[in-house]
Every structure is written in structure tokens, then in C-alpha cells.
Length: 159
Image (cartoon, rainbow, N blue to C red; front, side, top):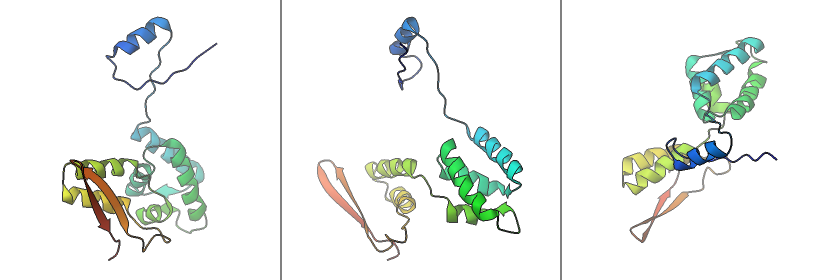
């Protein structure tokens, strides 16, 4: 019987010593940007399309360096660009067709709010609260608890 356990810890942990003694140990690394960029370039060559350098960087950042999301979002862009005369994907097309993963920006916003950095919090919240067509008129309401007191931020996009 083979058992696989994922443990997230730093490399000097005593837990890793015990795991190495009892079984095998394998490091799993997140893919690097250059690898995703290389995959994107290879796929573009196969499909005979081109990305501007800014569009490629924006696409990789928007999918939060996730290779499966990169594949999905690339297919969306490919489906659009295949009918165009100019087979070059630019930044505007990436903005229009690729959904952005906001995981990291939410954590940044929480950090800014915790540190009472209003400017940073507003920048991070502006990115996170980009309205969709159905939510365009809904105000964004965020509750935060600072020193036991409840605070509430109301942001109305476009108002």
C-alpha cells in the first residue's frame, strides 16, 4: 500500500527528517514563469499565432502562474484570434478575454487594511472590485475587525 501525504513546511523541519527515515521524500515545486512562457511560445508556434511580450506577461500573471488555467485561457484567445487577419494577440485582447485570478490581491488588501494603509488598501480593492456586467451597480461592502471594533468600508464602483 502506498500512501501520499502533502506537507507544507520549511526544509529544516524535524518532520521532514522523520519522513525521510520512514519512506521516500519528494519536493514539488510550482512552475516558474519562464517555463510557462516557454510553453506559451511553443504552443503559439504550433498554432501560428503571436503574442506581444506585454500580452504574454499579462496572460501568465492573470492566470496566477497556473498551467491548467493558462491552457484554458490560451484556448479562448486562440478561438478569437483564428478568425482575425492579424494573428497577433495584444494586451487589450488579454484584458478583454482572460479572467484574472484575484487570490493574491485579496491577501494584499487584507494586509493593507490591517496596517491601516488607506492608499494601498484602495489600490488593492480597486483591482479586486472590478465590476462585472451584472454587478456594475452593486456597492462593495467590506467588514473588518480592528482591535475588537467593527469597521465597514463601502465602495461604490463608478460613483
